[in-house]
Length: 494
View 1 (cartoon, rainbow, N blue to C red):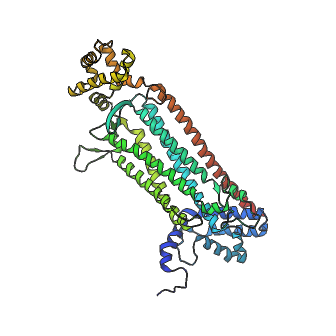
View 2: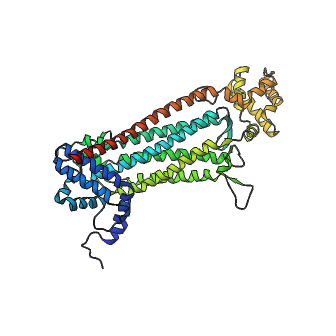
View 3: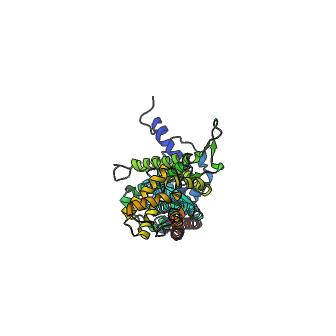
């Protein structure tokens, strides 16, 4: 029987406190050290602590960081968590002065600052990897501006376009996803330190200085909101979820295109596994892994967002260590999706022979025949559409390519209009050619090479701007880390 008056209860220790301690070791110890240094520098600069006291505390922090092997620590229950372990070490070394470091701060503002420090680093990596995917997509689209494919609607062959044009649509979604992630990253750039428990402090703290030393743009203003408004979590994981929901649809198309019956996409041998019993089978299983990993990532994001649902607007464990650490798995699986998809996109190719056969068999250029009749024969679209539909039915029934259907066209036109067509057979063949279909669609957003090249140039410019924003954030963080070490070193010498 355990003593119920002694903290922690063994079960609570093993089910909650010990796992959280391991999480601190894995994710937060470095950030906690940075927060301690920044807060101490601020206490000294504002003269809340004397320079001598601050120097003594700083020396003890330096010794603790160098002497304690965090990775080797195991949770014993002697201290509630790693924060209290460090404070106990300070007091063992400095006596009562060791408790002065916690002046004008709370675990509340420290925790959310720690979480933001970790999330901004992980988000920066994810943005960089998504930008690399966008770069790979743009390069592939540029190389495939004239590569014909069959565009499908409702699972059926619809119209011809180019692989570059299709990828352009994916690129636009990825760029919008990057904008959403960039906005979420910006929400991580305001520091909760100085909010203390919920109302700031009666001491003359300098919140701007701590934010600067930790690489933030500035403090998050409202102290209550610093520890209660966890929308920095929900907005980030919402933006992340959309990335993998959207990429999942792209991945599903790649799976469909690579099916034997469709055969539009060729996946190279380096990304194909062979059946253990059926040697003729080429299984592009990386696409399946992409699909399920994208779904797993979206689900992990949902877990974080769902945990915040209907929680009180105050300090709460629902938004803290346990949930924060669980959410990091979304970054891990998401990273694998982005890196593998960039490799697949760069290495796959279109099977042009299969595209040509499907184009012929499904009459997917027939819309351009209607358009040609409107332009060259002064017909209404509906009348032209009826002629084209009659031609399509005939060639499909007779299992011949549309380009071979000139006689069927002449008959259908004569029956519908009561006169001969002005289109000779070469003009007819040109009208129903997939290359003509694409070339004539040169409006903004269309697949014609000029229109597509113009769009790709715009995508590249947007990507350059997004990359610049990411680099600026990263540089600010790196500069702040150097400045913090300099300020801390100066404090030790004071």
